[in-house]
Amino acid sequence: MLRRFSGKARQTGEGRLKWFPIAGIPCQKMWDDDGYWLPYAISGLGFDHGFVYDSGMRRVNELRLANVRGRSWRG
Image: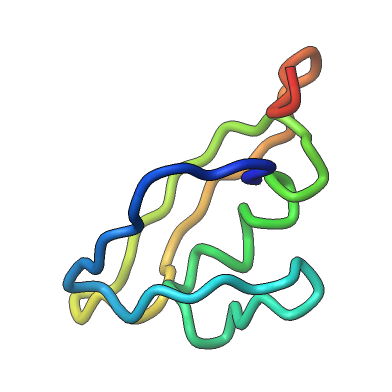
């Protein structure tokens, strides 16, 4: 998670840019896999992941998600 940011955020084709407090992240409006891996990233845990989406790219059909001991996002 960001603690500092400099520069200018740029829009992409995936959606409108907006900052959210951690407790208010709208996972239900994001890619389906975000609800699986985002709690690991927020808590600072290292993880290994893989997701397979359905043909419409709307829902995760298969997932592999594991906590990886000794890895941390907070270094």
